[in-house]
Amino acid sequence: MSEGDSARRWYRVKDVLESALERTPADRDAFLTQACGEDSALRAEVESLLSAFDKTEQSPQPAVHPIDAAAAARIRESPSSVVSSPATDWALRDRRMSGRRRHG
Image (cartoon, rainbow, N blue to C red; front, side, top):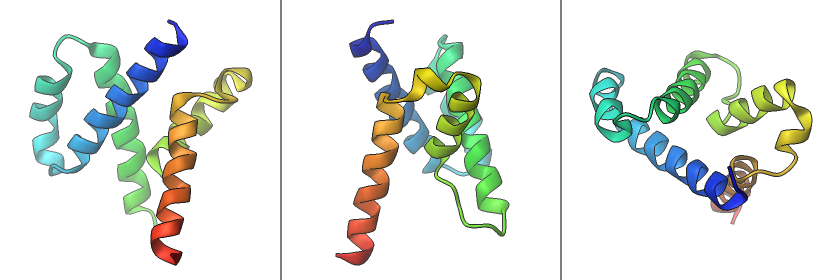
Protein backbone atom coordinates (compact mmCIF):
# COMPACT_ATOMS: atom_id res chain seq x y z
CA MET A 1 0.00 0.00 0.00
CA SER A 2 1.46 3.37 -0.99
CA GLU A 3 1.74 6.25 1.45
CA GLY A 4 -1.13 8.04 -0.32
CA ASP A 5 -3.31 4.93 -0.14
CA SER A 6 -2.42 4.51 3.51
CA ALA A 7 -3.38 8.12 4.26
CA ARG A 8 -6.70 7.74 2.42
CA ARG A 9 -7.36 4.52 4.32
CA TRP A 10 -6.78 6.19 7.70
CA TYR A 11 -9.05 9.07 6.79
CA ARG A 12 -11.72 6.53 5.81
CA VAL A 13 -11.27 4.71 9.13
CA LYS A 14 -11.49 8.06 10.96
CA ASP A 15 -14.67 9.07 9.12
CA VAL A 16 -16.43 5.77 9.77
CA LEU A 17 -15.28 5.74 13.41
CA GLU A 18 -16.53 9.26 14.06
CA SER A 19 -19.88 8.47 12.44
CA ALA A 20 -20.18 5.26 14.46
CA LEU A 21 -19.47 7.12 17.69
CA GLU A 22 -22.36 9.47 16.93
CA ARG A 23 -24.71 6.48 17.09
CA THR A 24 -25.86 4.45 20.05
CA PRO A 25 -24.04 1.16 20.57
CA ALA A 26 -27.25 -0.66 19.56
CA ASP A 27 -27.32 1.14 16.19
CA ARG A 28 -23.64 0.71 15.33
CA ASP A 29 -23.81 -2.80 13.86
CA ALA A 30 -26.33 -1.80 11.19
CA PHE A 31 -24.37 1.37 10.49
CA LEU A 32 -21.10 -0.54 10.08
CA THR A 33 -22.76 -3.05 7.76
CA GLN A 34 -23.89 -0.16 5.56
CA ALA A 35 -20.74 1.98 5.84
CA CYS A 36 -18.17 -0.79 5.39
CA GLY A 37 -20.01 -2.96 2.88
CA GLU A 38 -17.74 -5.81 1.75
CA ASP A 39 -14.61 -4.19 3.26
CA SER A 40 -14.09 -6.55 6.19
CA ALA A 41 -10.67 -5.04 7.03
CA LEU A 42 -12.24 -1.58 7.42
CA ARG A 43 -14.97 -2.98 9.61
CA ALA A 44 -12.48 -4.89 11.77
CA GLU A 45 -10.33 -1.78 12.24
CA VAL A 46 -13.31 0.39 13.20
CA GLU A 47 -14.70 -2.28 15.54
CA SER A 48 -11.29 -2.53 17.22
CA LEU A 49 -11.21 1.22 17.78
CA LEU A 50 -14.81 1.24 19.01
CA SER A 51 -13.95 -1.51 21.47
CA ALA A 52 -10.99 0.48 22.77
CA PHE A 53 -13.19 3.56 23.06
CA ASP A 54 -15.93 1.67 24.90
CA LYS A 55 -13.40 0.23 27.37
CA THR A 56 -12.00 3.67 28.15
CA GLU A 57 -15.48 5.11 28.56
CA GLN A 58 -16.28 2.47 31.20
CA SER A 59 -12.94 2.85 32.96
CA PRO A 60 -12.57 5.06 36.04
CA GLN A 61 -9.10 6.00 34.73
CA PRO A 62 -8.51 9.02 32.52
CA ALA A 63 -9.83 8.34 29.03
CA VAL A 64 -7.39 7.34 26.31
CA HIS A 65 -8.15 8.51 22.82
CA PRO A 66 -9.14 5.44 20.72
CA ILE A 67 -6.53 6.27 18.10
CA ASP A 68 -3.89 6.40 20.87
CA ALA A 69 -4.90 2.90 21.95
CA ALA A 70 -4.70 1.62 18.38
CA ALA A 71 -1.33 3.29 17.85
CA ALA A 72 -0.01 1.77 21.07
CA ALA A 73 -1.09 -1.68 19.90
CA ARG A 74 0.65 -1.16 16.55
CA ILE A 75 3.82 0.05 18.27
CA ARG A 76 3.90 -3.11 20.36
CA GLU A 77 3.43 -5.24 17.20
CA SER A 78 5.92 -3.40 14.98
CA PRO A 79 7.65 -0.35 16.48
CA SER A 80 9.24 0.82 13.24
CA SER A 81 5.94 0.85 11.33
CA VAL A 82 4.30 3.57 13.43
CA VAL A 83 7.03 6.16 13.81
CA SER A 84 4.93 8.49 11.69
CA SER A 85 1.70 7.42 10.09
CA PRO A 86 -1.52 9.19 9.21
CA ALA A 87 -3.14 7.67 12.31
CA THR A 88 -0.51 8.80 14.77
CA ASP A 89 -0.17 12.18 13.08
CA TRP A 90 -3.95 12.65 13.22
CA ALA A 91 -4.08 11.63 16.89
CA LEU A 92 -1.34 14.09 17.78
CA ARG A 93 -3.02 16.92 15.83
CA ASP A 94 -6.34 16.08 17.44
CA ARG A 95 -4.79 16.12 20.92
CA ARG A 96 -3.09 19.48 20.26
CA MET A 97 -6.30 21.00 18.91
CA SER A 98 -8.41 19.78 21.85
CA GLY A 99 -5.84 21.36 24.19
CA ARG A 100 -6.19 24.66 22.40
CA ARG A 101 -9.97 24.57 22.66
CA ARG A 102 -9.80 23.95 26.40
CA HIS A 103 -7.03 26.40 27.19
CA GLY A 104 -7.33 29.01 24.47
